[in-house]
Image (cartoon, rainbow, N blue to C red; front, side, top):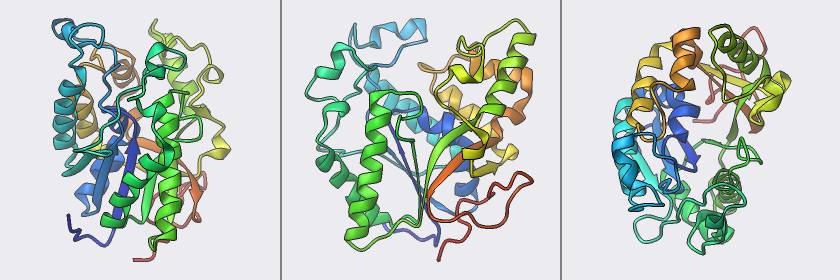
Length: 290
């Protein structure tokens, strides 16, 4: 694939739906503004819970066909976000399976992503990096946000691939990790309590590993105009995200704007203008050499 845009963004995620929850408005905004956006998904999410009763047979404990179905969901979600370049790591010849949650029997399978050789997996991503030449990379932090083995492995693979790509001639100028400030999470918890609901069972933002101290959040994309696309993409991931679940309850009780801000920690590169009132940069490409 040859790229035409001077700005190129790469996102590395573990399973279908992670990209929409974490980066839906970011992806939609940049794509709409002519940025070449590439999504690399590391597994098909075969071990995910099936929330649609009529599709329960797809589960790994039944027909084990959820991965195939989630490929379709991902395609539909990317259509909603306006993303044309989305791939599975190592496809078509090499695909890693969803590893399930930490400590489960699935972790021990030889074909799961958690067991993948880091250098082999990173080499697959290096090939993509050298093809598309992104200036900006988005992935997870060192605990994968909340400790899922595939998220942690995606972090390791993305960071190693960026290092290897630089040794082969392409330097990714800015690398971001997905994050959520504790203050925002706490606001959501309090609002949900007011209407008699909960936020993933948490009493406080301190109970959630993906909630980070506000001072660690360096950057934010504010794109409320793309919230409808994000919500449509979330609905496309129907087996994983229930319209009656906490995500859509947040929309009902906090307003659609709750999904309009997406937060990041810059771990490579320097924050650049413009900044918001909290000193967070407002453009992931700010300061990038084009």
